[in-house]
Image (cartoon, rainbow, N blue to C red):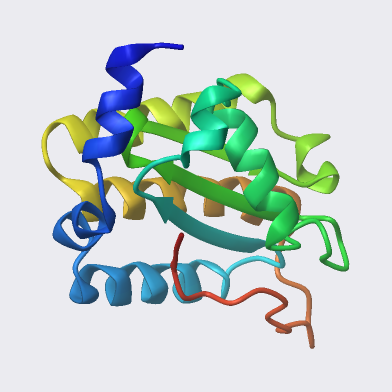
Length: 166
């Protein structure tokens, strides 16, 4: 077990989420998701988590593994066109992960998703958390717009746009 990581997770509580993502920021992020989804048929979900629980730390769960778990728990895979995308932030690890359903994964490479994550993390290091998430949403939205353009009479919102604080 990585003692430094464990301490970081123990010291990162829910207050950190609301300090870095106050209600106003969460509302702006929700509006950015709503706006993005007016340009494509994809579904974007943003989730932020302060830290992993003790059992996850003992199992040495990575941020990526946790993101896959959250993707499943939130049923992001359950969209009509298999084009749901999760942007997941684990604050204690200072890590951003993007998990995409099979419909969009077949069209966008892991390297392209990673580039978006690194851009967001760079903005986070500059303490620009809201801007980092908005940039990520915009970049994900561009991929969805390219591969799942908006179709006439299709404006069904399959996933909530409101950010999820875990």
